[in-house]
Image (cartoon, rainbow, N blue to C red; front, side):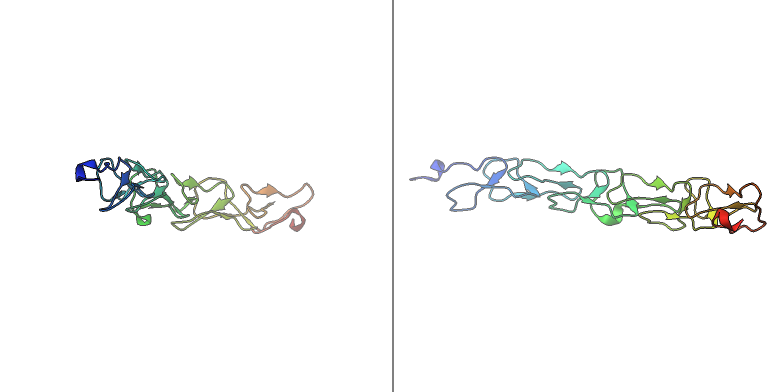
Length: 179
């Protein structure tokens, strides 16, 4: 080469430092959308890029967050969730409320099923009602004592009546054999 004008411009998605003999693809987590660049730009927080040689970054995904320069979305922790696509840190994921849970990467919280509960925030799962108690509604923060004349196995969603010919006035029975 006899002049700088004979050098080839680095193409979008690539860069070339001074004295380069070839262009280099932008790494995952970065991009450039212009020619003649000496470096790539890190994806801004709330976005990511999972491929090399790209000209733009992608919005983060719901249920995830993306720090600056992210090459992949990171899921919200168990017990948290988000339906937004611009989160930049795990602390922006929303805590699941009592009576609800959220698994890793959730986009919404889920109500505890009948027969289970949670009385705390930020739970990744609900707890089955212990034997001798039940819960007949969803999204609850406690279980109810079993009813007299009935028994309740672990995880019961309703009291089961004592068999014909048996009875009990207790409210903590766990099996028909206790009637």
